[in-house]
Length: 232
Image 1 (cartoon, rainbow, N blue to C red):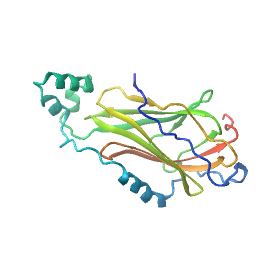
Image 2: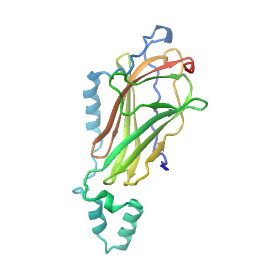
Image 3: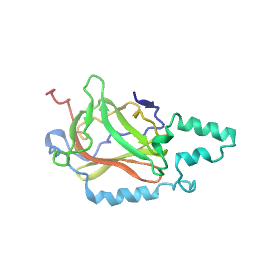
Image 4: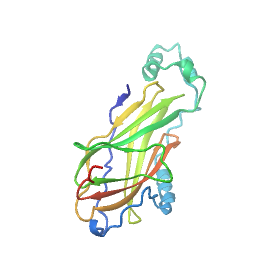
């Protein structure tokens, strides 16, 4: 059984209308089409402009965390509440948290879930189609081990015809190690609609923490069309 995580905040993940690119004239996205490399440097520059994380001192293991201030009753209770039922024998003395994104899905009422394959097969890539004006949610499943991960978040950057048209950030939160995976579902949103919104897009999603350590980076491509694709 996984632990459901309540959304902390929500940035719109839909794609605003870009330049003229009607569906009939748009070239179909290549399977697994990579996001333009020329934008990678710009994206990194935006990350550099983000507020610096507060320096909380040197990283320590969970065992050390529990040993520190053990005579302070309020701090001890707070740490136990944060860590929950962590098995200290399994986490050991590891300093770095280990976060594994185990599944990424797009949920839309009345439709079969679109599951992005992990890990991505470089020879096939990732490609899917969404219907314009359709409600959807994003669902992430991930596991945390070894140590607490602070400020886990994901970023999603979308390009159309080589131009960046959207960049979203979502703060997932801080998580302690546990045997069961965590599940995070975003609030419902709606895909854009209209002639200028239809067409082919490429995108890049990253999962990072407060130290900007990247746990997953995935490039994918998708189309927005008038209708859902026919069921195979």
